[in-house]
Length: 344
Ligand SMILES: [Fe+2]
Image (cartoon, rainbow, N blue to C red; front, side):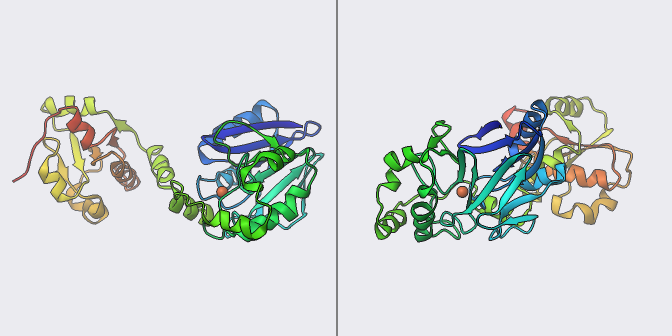
């Protein structure tokens, strides 16, 4: 077996391959690591056949959909997953064949209704059902403390105690443990009474995970994160540096249109000398009047350099093929002490 654990902060993902056939499966991939997974697979001569999420993640952005598209392989989740992009929905005890490996799904609702653990030879991928020294929380959408108790105490904790536990989260870089170790030392498992366990889970008083709303939106719908949308836009336009823009406005030539896409008020309060104002929200409506010559060189700018990137992409799509976006925004421009002009 070829086995690689990839950590992204506390999030753990796993690339597991069959050494006889070079077939592999990827478990709980995270969006920022897409290139790393593909690089590891290439390095080890593996072909990924399935991308699996052990459950609907509320705390990180899953890469299953992006990888499935790129590799033309199915997204695998439990059948209770709300995500519309799941190609292969597993039920309890279903096996996935990956070369000579057999990965078995165990439905373990509790952290979420669609949680499953994956059994493979001497190990179990526990998602957020069982963590090292902890369990997944049960206070997020579709969580159920009673169901988690059953999934643990009537479910996976009855398996071979020697099984190695590989969770979806581990913030202390411990890598793995075993069921026996968890049974002996995991504080959440010491309360073996169902009512007591539920009461404990309901009084944990945890803060909401960062990105909760956005992660759930994306992982449940297959939509994009704001960062992803901006990243894709940034790949479609060139940029102009702050230093170059400053040099250009100083040289007196007017071959460059500096297009400030912020709202009028922000523009009036201080803008790059000689800039035009065309708010992003009015861009397509007024572009024909404000920018009659598509051969002119344009640089878009805004407060932080994000909306101006989207504006530059829109302008390029409209045929303004010499459009760039400012690499930075007015905040950086001001911080650099560059000249400002005010209106009124
Ligand atoms: Fe989770």
